[in-house]
Image (cartoon, rainbow, N blue to C red; front, top):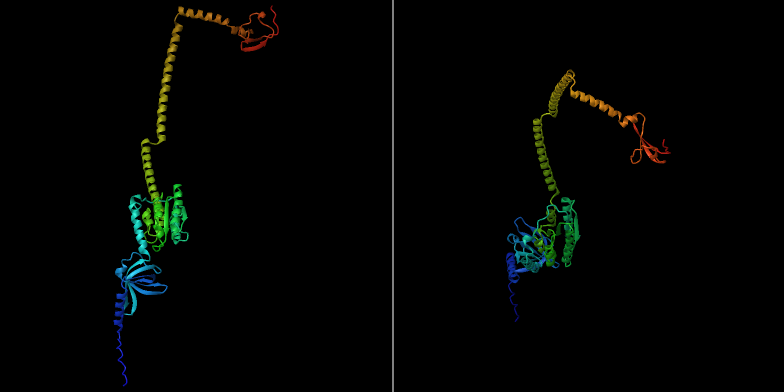
Length: 430
């Protein structure tokens, strides 16, 4: 008797939607919640606020969707190429049957461990007072010299140099190059700052910029170094830290006197626009000119008022001249009158003397006059006028006799109109 074949098992035929839901349930039970590490690709943000991107590595990729509520909690702006860790749940999009990862949280790759280190160091340094606002110093209104620490190959160098050249082209900038990423970066940053501190002590710079462009937490990790933080706090001049983008924070930002959201913003903070200074100077010049005009106008008015009170100088001189003329005339008249009176009195006295008989006094006068005539006749000078000479020795002794004169002796002969120096040749008594 031939065997009859057994009945074949009945095949289950799935509806497409049911299969998608079954796959979704299986994925949810097997994997969710899931954490995936990869590189962002094709990131976009829709007008609704939802974000869409792919997460990939060298061996595969998966589509991701992040809805508006979760996207609003992002503490950074995801970009293509960012290495991230995402947490979410696997699902199947029924409409297309696509496998997708519904992302609920995103953080940069490795951020968990590094971020915990960052928080611990921040808490410890804050407790030690390194972030104390009372320690922060205001920037110079117009710096005399600026020190700059960054990498020679960084885009931040070009951005800062361009901003400083545009806003304060006359202020010297001293570059202290250093690595801004990698294991050697903290030591080089410390050494660069120390070199600028020496220039600050010499008075060559009064402001320092510490800058680099944006990047991941790992890229910026050199600026979370404790030795660098303590070096920043020791800066002898105000220090501005411009590291990363607006959402990036490092330990250096908290230690600096001022934190700038970007390198370019740091340059703009220390270098006020030249146009604003020129505008201020023009306003001060206009105010000075107005004040000077007011002073000059006031002085001119006071001068006019004083001139009106004084009158014309020529008029005053003419008045004084007239007064002097009158006084001179009065004086001449008074002198003539007195002279006339004196002359009249003298004439009257002379006439009276002529009319009066010769008094005894008159006879005495005549006798005195005769005695005076005889006395004048005895005057030696009258004798000298008749040709005689008076001889004297060097000591003034008169030579009255010839015997007093010795040959070779110097004598003086006194004449009526002078003297003659003589030398005795010989002397002979008569």
